Every structure is written in C-alpha cells, then in structure tokens.
Amino acid sequence: MTVQTATKVAPARKGRRHRRGPRLTRRDRVVIGLMIGIPLLLDLAFIWGPAMATVFLSFTDAHSVAPVKWTGGANYTFMRKVDPTFWPAVQHNVIWLVEFIVIATPLGMLLAVLLDRGIKGSRVYQAIFFLPVMLSLALIGIIWQIVYSQQFGLINGLLQRTSTTDAINWLGNPKLNLWAVLVEATWRQAGYVMVLYLAGLRAFDPELREAAIIDGANAWQTFWRVVFPTLRPINIVIVVVTVIESLRAFDLVFITNGGSNGLELLSSMITIYIIGPANRIGYGSALGVVLLVISLVPITFFLVQQFRKENRP
Amino acid sequence: MTALAVQHTRRRANAPKGARARGGRLATHAVLLVLAVLWSLPILWAVYVSLRPESDTKKYGYASIAHALTFQNYSDAWTQGQIPHFFQNTVIITAPAVIITLFLASCVAFVVARFSFRFNLILLLLFTAGNLLPQQTLLSPLFKIFLYVHVPSFLSQSGTLYDSAFGLIVINVAFQTGFCVFVLSNFMRTIPEEITEAGLVDGASVWTLYWRLTLPLCRPALAALATLLTTWIYNDFFWALTLMSTGSKLPITTAINNLKGQFAQNNNLLSAGALIIALPTLVVYLVLQRQFIAGLTLGSTKG
Image 1: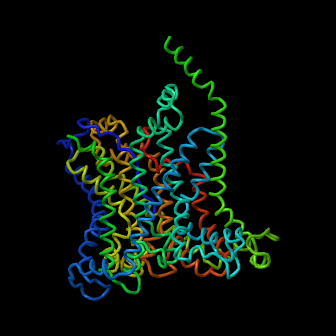
Image 2: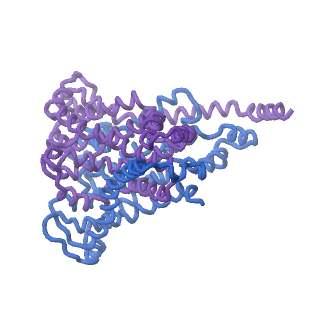
Image 3: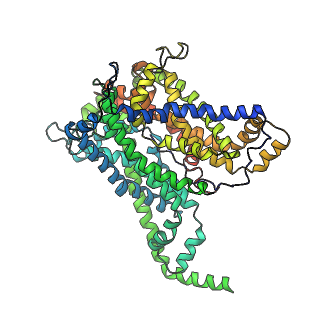
C-alpha cells in the first residue's frame, strides 16, 4: 500500500471565503449536513472508531467467540517478556526504516536529481524506474521470488550455484532473507521517491540555480545550499513517506513466507495473531497499539507541517 | 548594462567548465544506464521465463539460451488459475469503490473549501490522518465489526460485512476517502471563488454550486485521482486477505497468494500468471502515466 500524500496545502484565503450567513436556506443546511455527515460517519465507524477500539481491546483477552475479559496490562507484559518474536520483529522494522533512510530514499532522490538535468532519454529512464511503483507489492514479491529462486532463479543461475548442495537460499535463510526482501522494497521505494522529488525539482525556479552557478558554486554546493533548502515542503513529504512506508511494510514479507523465519514485522505479527488459527484478537490489538503509537509520530509531524498555516488566526 | 555584465560573467564562469560539464553528462548517463539495466532485470527475467516451455528450462536449466519460445504458459495460467474469474471479482469491488470514494470525498472537500465552518480544520485533520495509519492497526476491531454487522442478503451472500465484496467496497471507500478529501480540498481552493459567489447571488442552491459549478471544474483532479485509486484498490492485498475467507471470492491481487501455491512447482507458469495480473496496471501505466503521476504529486507544484 502506498502512502498517500499530496504536498502542499494552498494557503487559506481567510476572510474571502463565504461566511455561514443567513443566505443558506434550510434545505441547503440539510444538504451540507449530509455532504459532511455521511463521509464523516464512515470515517469514524471504520477508521477512527477501530483505531480507538484497538486500544480498548489491547487490555482484554478477546478471541473470536468467547466473551471478552479485561486483563489489564497482561498482553503488554507477555509482549515484552514472553513472546519470542516481538523483539526480533521490532528489530526488523527498525532495520527496514534505517535501510529506507540510508539507501532507498537517497537513491530515489539521486535519480530525481540526475533526471532533472534534462539529459537525452530521461523520460525512458524515468519510465523504467517508475514501473515497479505501479505493481502491487504482492506481485513484486512473486516476481522477485522468480529471480531469487534457488534452482530456477536468475541470481543463482548467474552465480552458477543451482545444485541442491550449493544453491543460495535467498528467501529461506533467516540471515539473508530480510536483506533480500529489502532489495525488493527498495526497487519500489526508490521509484516512488524519485517521482515525488522530481515534481518538487521541476517546480524549482531555475533562475535561483543559475544565480548560484554564476556565483561560482559547483553542482554539489548548488544542490545542498540552494535547491535542497527551498524544497522544504517536498522534503517533509519524503520524510513522512519514508517512515510511514517502512511501518506499513507487510505485503512483501507476507507473500514471501507469511512473515516468519527471519521476516517477522509488527504488521505481519498483528495479522497472524488476529486472522490466524490462534485468533488472539486481544494480543493482536496490543501489538496494533504499539504500531499505532509509533505511526502517530510521523503522522503528527506531517499534519503540523501541513496545517500550521491554516491554524493561524 | 547589468544584463551585459551578467552575461559576460556567465560566459566566463561556463567557459572552463565545458569539458567538465560534458564529463558530468557522460557520468550521469553511465550511472542511469547501469541502474536502469538493474531495475529492468527482474521484469525482463520474468518475461523470459514465462515465454519458455517448461520442458526447455528443465532440459537446459533456467539460466540458459532458450531453444523454444511459446505463449502456452500464458494460456495455461489464464485457464488453470481461473484468472478471468478473479479479474471479475476485482472489477466488482474496484469500480464502485472508486466512484463512491470520489463522490464522498468531493462532497467533504467542497464544503471545507467553500464554507468557513469552525470544524473545517478538524475535519481535514481527521480525514488526512486516517489515511496515513497502517492498515494493521485497525484490524482487530474491524475484524469483529465485519463479523457482527449484518447486511441484507442482496448485498452480501454471507449476511455480514465479512467475506463479502460489499464489505471490501466499504472499507476501501472509508480508507481512501481521506487522501482524496485532502487533495480535492486543496484543488478546489485554487478555483476562483467568484464562480460560486456569482452562483449564490443568482440564488443557486448548495447542491447546484457543488454539482453544476464546482465538480466540472475539478475534472483534471478527479481524473488523476480516479487513475490513482483504481490502481491502489486493484493492488490492495491486505483488506481482502483479512476480511474475506472464501477463496473464490477474492480479488485478483489477493488471489496471487493462492496462485503462488498452485503454481509452486512451475516457475514458467507462475511468471506468466504474474505478468497477466500485472497487465492492467501496466496498461494504465503506459496510457495514463501522466494522470497517475499528476495524482501522486497533485498540489506539490503551484500549477
């Protein structure tokens, strides 16, 4: 799933908008009520309601059928002290995030900067890098499974290691598979960041850059001292996309092996506890709360940056 | 005078850099070319494998020159994987979900952009933030809600939201509306207010202002969002995985999980199946790439 963000809120034109005047008839007010009410109800019932309810359920032992019993912090104690997969999952999420910050996102930005130089064939390059973004993550997982396949894959084929004794088990070896899957994730994330960043670069005033070059700055200095700081709105979006996408990571590990054996993530643990045979909805909720609380950090950061302007009196 | 001086200095600044600039250009090409080759390898490999008969790969190995090429794998995957059936499941979910999402989101966006109520900011915050939550954080209550909410049987065979196309439409609409509200309200603010003001003076109702005067002007944004939403809902894996239990009702992206098991012994067939499933998004990509990117970056530039 993609993180969906547009980048800049048009400045609110306070005072020029319509007041809630007496001009609105009764019928108009009913229409406005419905136009807001129905989507809001849907949003509260299926998004915010469940988000709150997750917190409640995390303090219970909810299963699919039995009556719900309040168990206080038992789920959280179990998580910290007993569950053998919790800390590895957290570690994998952190590795995922760090990889995105250090490799995937900078790579996407680099691609954008290179493509923005207006060289020949840049549209073709752009099309190639963007292609993975169009595919579902489930499909990306399948395509790479064909590449990583032990006996039939491209990589082992090129390495000439396809016999049953020396084939590298890219997706099965718990020491390797997280990195193998991160390559898949990077394949997509870099293209995504590239497109977002390219839009920002295209909106950049070329005269500013020219002025910097005239002043004797080289390309490196021009980018970091002039271009980068003025792209603040898009930079914020990139930061948020990077963090949120790494918290949302799920489909790739799930399609690969159900999120086990070295590929545990918080998201896959939640899913398996809730829909799996154990059906431990209460414990799954506690894991959900952990993910929710972590996610609220980048979300709040994004909202504050986006809507600060509007909030001014 | 100043212009001349600037030109002069610019020429002087550029002159010694000519060779270096050319070198830079060459390096750029080299980096891009290497990365582009690496980037396209997985897809090209899948295409190559899918075009080879299984007997050919068995005999010569996968990393070998093909001795025969065929489309047989595609037709086998198409029938054995029941792909038309799963495509149909996807259409039943995606088409209504996209239309309803755009309708509801444009309603909220219109009110937020055109009237200054006190709760506007809170509304925007709620919708935008809701869309950024990881889906898994909502799962446990949603799972219960879907099991317990009863729905008339003409909407859902199962009698509940769980395990029904209707339920998946509902959750997709609820989840995607937030982003569309955010984008559309930004877009609507760029439409001159004089248009709605003139309408109000003429005594037009709120509905007329929305449906007749505002929506037609939002066509570019709506087209971009429709492209984006179609791709996202088509590509959604999670909701159907968790909120649907009957294998034959699954939309195609989630059905991949079962196809993977079904074709586990035959990578040629699996590649062909994967590429067939990728085809609709690749068509969107070729035909509507600009719309798609416009949707992703809507509002990021001033235009």
